[in-house]
Each structure stands twice: as C-alpha cells, then as structure tokens.
Amino acid sequence: MYPLKRNRRLRTNEAIRSLVRETIISPNDFLVPLFVVEGKGVKEEIASMPNYFRYSLDLLEKEVKELWSLGLKSVLLFVKVPDNLKDNKGTEAINPNGLMQRAIKTVRNACPDMLVMTDVAMDPYSSYGHDGIVQNGLILNDASVDVLTEMSLSHARAGAHFVAPSDMMDGRILSIREAFEDEGFYDTGIVSYSAKYASAFYGPFRDALDSAPVDMANVPKDKQSYQMDPANRFEAIRETEMDIDEGADIVMIKPGLCYLDIVREIKNAVDVPVAVYQVSGEYAMLKAAAERGWLNHDAVMMEQITAIKRAGADVIASYFAKDVVKLLN
Ligand code: PBG
Image (tube, rainbow, N blue to C red; front, side):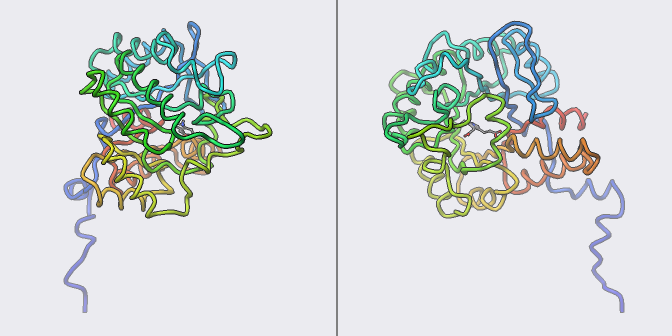
C-alpha cells in the first residue's frame, strides 16, 4: 500500500518548486544600514564586520549610487561621532550641521529618489554610551525623550523621509509624532524599533560606532533597564501596540533570527508593516563561520533572509542586502 498523496511531487524539479514557492526575496525587501564617518576618501572596514565599511560623505555618495543601481532604494543612516563631541545629553545630535544632518543631505542630493531613514538614538553621541541621559546611575526617560524629539526634528529638517527611534524610552513615538505635526512634517514617517531586545548580538555594531556603554562608576553597565528582556513575549506585543497607538507607521523587531517567533506573533497581531533588523552579530557569525569554511556563506545567507521574510517581515534591515541582491542578479 503506497500513499495516494505524495508531497514530493511538488518538489520534483526547479520549475515546480519555483511555481509553488511561497516566499520570494527581492531588492524591494531591504533597508540598507550605512555607517558614516567624518573625513574625505575614507572607507574603513569594521573589524568585526568583514566586508562592511564606514564611509566619509564623498564615498557615501558613491555607495548610495551603487545601491540604487542594484535596485536597493532605502537606506538607514548611522554616524560615528568623534569622542570630543560626545556628552551626557547628546548635544551634537541636534547640531543642524552635524554629520548625520550632512549625510542626509548628501544622500538626498546624490540619489533624489532614495528613501532616507535615520537612526534616532543618543548612544553614538553619549559620553556614557547610553541611549538616554544618565543621572545617579539611572537612565532618565522623559528628559531623554525631549532630546530624541529634537533629534528627530533636526533629521526631518535636513530631509529624512523616516526617522527610526532605536532607544526604547517610553512615550517617544507620541512625542516625535506631535512635534512633526506641529512643525508641518506631516509626511515624515516613524519606523519604531518597538520590540528591541537587550541583545548580546549588537557587539559588532558598537565597535562600528564606538558606542558601547562605558565602564564607569554610576553608569549602568548594560541596556537592560530600557531594552527588552529576551525571555519576554507578551511585552513585545504590548510595546508594539503602544507604538502604533502613538503614531508609528512601521514597527520593528530586533534582532532577527533568535526572535522569529516574536515576528510572526506581531505580524499576526498588527496591521502596519513589520520590519525586522538582522543585526551586526548575526552578520558577524555567518562571516566568521564562512571564513573558516564551516558554512556555505551564500546558501546560509539566503536561508536566513528567507526565514526572516517567511516569519512575517515586510521590511528587512540587513548588512547582507547588497550580497543578496548581487546573488539574485
Ligand atoms: C542604537 C542602535 C543599536 C543598534 C541599532 N541602533 C545598538 C544598541 O542599541 O546598542 C544595533 C544594530 C546592530 O547590532 O546591527 N541605539
């Protein structure tokens, strides 16, 4: 007695497999993170992120043109701030002529149709490496939200299409949305990092921007008082629903692979686009294993990206974006 139903029929050859494939990756899926530094002619590889670079503005211009030619139409900007410009309040973040503000203009000029999103967080600007103002060993919420709101306005004035607050302070989405409406930035959107976990996978990113929390008395050693506990699920739904109520246009879950259960749950629960950030540590892990010949880089990369999309990601922020698109071509 053989089975009448044979699932393998749909796997017989590539033609039938591609006919019934449920998840298709395209350049439209990606948001490309970019690291920017001061200087001229600078393209520095990040030690813990092989083949990923920090660019000075002149080379950023070249890079975004290349991304555009590959069909990658959205970027997420991060800046590395010199130590002498850092303070507890992230003052440099709202400098209208700061590196971020100039980077936004550079991309807008180089590639007028490119969608420009900006990371809104104090840590690259903070002398303590935190996403909020530090006082007596604590991270102040509301005072930090005021800074994040000013920072968002400053990015909007420079021409950002979307701001992406990645700090996890309470109430920041509402504050930013209200400030945008007050200033007439009706079309400037908010991608909220709404379920951002206190993850150990951010290490290489903090190397890239030199933004790790400093080891100092009366400064929290980690970000657990604001980023979420990896053990929690309901909290992710609550955070995300609150951000949507406050005015988030797109919500984000971060990191990616370890949190795909959360991605699916949020995708089922909300009706706004869901973004997933495949973070620096996820990138570094695969690069390291592939360098040793332990994993097939391209095959594992595609499997991971496909899994993220299958789990429910409408948007994928990934350091692999360019590698994936080159492979697709
Ligand atoms: C800044 C920020 C971080 C990341 C994105 N925005 C670091 C952090 O919160 O410590 C991490 C991204 C990555 O690891 O790729 N708040």
